[in-house]
Length: 306
Image: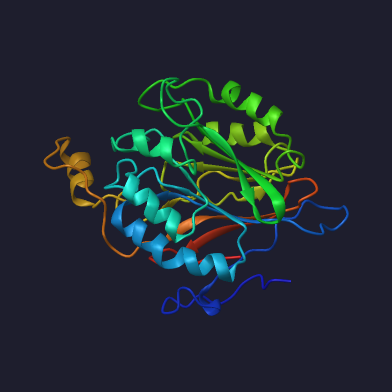
């Protein structure tokens, strides 16, 4: 049994005495699971600070937490706008098994070619139909198991109109039954509205191991296992400097809010970053979540780990 809480020591943000954990979010009565996968999802990597945090922490966490599969959202990895091929390689070398994108998928022009060469990068399934790359992929995991990763864009409050996310994801879920063709299914719901993210969680309940929101860069406190066995978190937060305005250096966003006028381009904040995301443990027989924990490592936020 893992300890439920531990004293928080800001001088030791990574060690056991600096970690705050929560009780397991179990499914309730039923036979105990025999084996499963340990999955980690990290939220939007924001600029150099986020890249540095992933490079410094992820290799160690893969080993210490005995992770079977890691998904990282690289949407804002390159100067806060998109993901370059070079930075994609950096995240993959650090230990990511899959990189997801978002509405800024092709802000870095070389991603148009990089995504065709690198199958471990996926873009939203309901992006423009002519866009290169794929919106889902079935990945190999240890022990001959398979992990399906799907990314989908929401519609509410987004700057451009994307196709309906619910009708886009339905045939993929049907073709990859949880606990059958895929031992785990991870859905990255990239959008603004918390209500739309929650609706997607319930829409996928019982058919996905994890539905996690990205895009808004603020970790929410509603980690839970839904009634059908799907792990859910409205937003994983960002891997970036939280002494900022959603990862950007504070000066220019504050100027625009106060005066209504812009003077400079936004630039990512460069202070120490917090690695933010969610850890999920699954049951191989059903593919459902049996344990779900929010993750915060390093930086300014209160620390949390499995």
